[in-house]
Length: 367
Ligand code: NAD
Image (cartoon, rainbow, N blue to C red; front, side, top):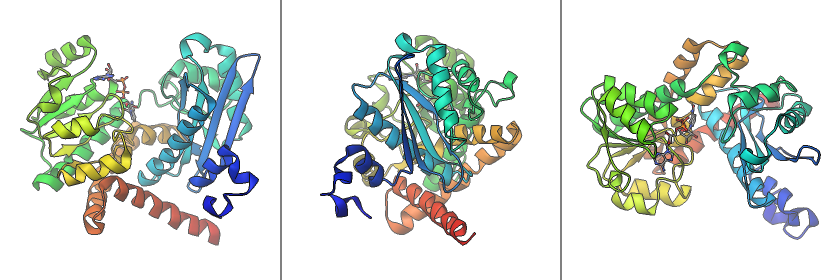
């Protein structure tokens, strides 16, 4: 039943249930513990492909509705990300409400771990904003359903090199679509954010002979990239006016917006940051109109989830990297679909993800 059909019933007037129904979320769990100050929401969007997996984000939301909106949006995104990456994982996410610097404690994290455990494996957690691998170790004291553990605990460690490799191969597929060759040699690439993923990406690009420009709010990270990779530093107020071929957002989200799209001269946008389009529909269409090829973020940066997926069955980095290499083909395929159907690339990626979900749901129904 569609939400609009039951608008007048009491059920649909409940904003939580209405929102769950809007995007077909399976389950939303509200966690509260006065003793530790824990207030969290776990959202399971879809488990057709497998257990839902997605990080736990700690954030000082203004109110519970804001936290709910975030966790519902992020968990749905995880369903698409895992589906299009060909993983047997569903989409889930958790948010802990509060200032991590003020309220995070061992007791709070362990209490959260108990809530995760109560779901019996239907939700597997991992690191996200304001959560560290040490926090994952603490949550792991209460539940097995944690991924992204440190290597010395049998985990997969830092996923960033695998994520960066995925971004690199996706960029090559984007180059092939744009210029007919996937070589990045001589291409001018701006990498914004030289953190864990950004630095590893700069290394791949430098090895291939690209001309790399770097920007970061950390002077130290910029200096490191300039010294180590001979990259060229560019100031924040100049970077979007540069004459470049490729823009690689590897810092925060929403960097593709009205302002930057008015200035960017690149032919390709392909980077690791989540939620790069400030407004998915509006800016997804705008990049298309401007003749910029946008490689959808959740396809490009799937190396991270691919990496933790391989942790679940006994970690092997070679297999994780081999799977991440398939991001080349997926990127290429979605570009073809985007052209065939004359739809923006972000939509083509969602269609690919939905197609896999629908086909596997059909098999499940038969079995
Ligand atoms: P990170 O924190 O190691 O690096 C981010 C870098 O961006 C830092 O050096 C920071 O100083 C810089 N930065 C922050 N704001 C900036 C701004 N306004 N302008 C320029 N630089 C800025 O993070 P990371 O692990 O490298 O991840 C980068 C992005 O990719 C994030 O958006 C993350 O959510 C996304 N992502 C990462 C992974 C992964 O495996 N690490 C997987 C999927 C998605």
